[in-house]
Length: 85
Image (tube, rainbow, N blue to C red; front, side, top):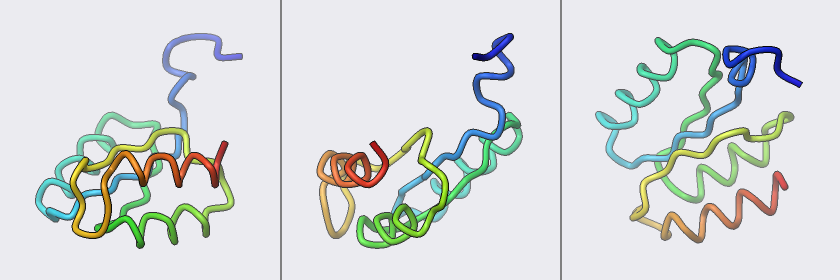
């Protein structure tokens, strides 16, 4: 159980899925500056599922574009959740 607010996000694993590389970079930089986050990235739903599946750790937070070139974000969210309940 976290002892204070800072412990709640310590080394949280975040999967960021965004097909616009500028936006993707901005989000990742912001999370890294905030500290306590390890970021995985993907530019498509297919890549996100591969990254998620390859991860030995459970995804703590999923940040995604709702409209990806190969899927809807809501569908991807369900797929990732089934990999990491």
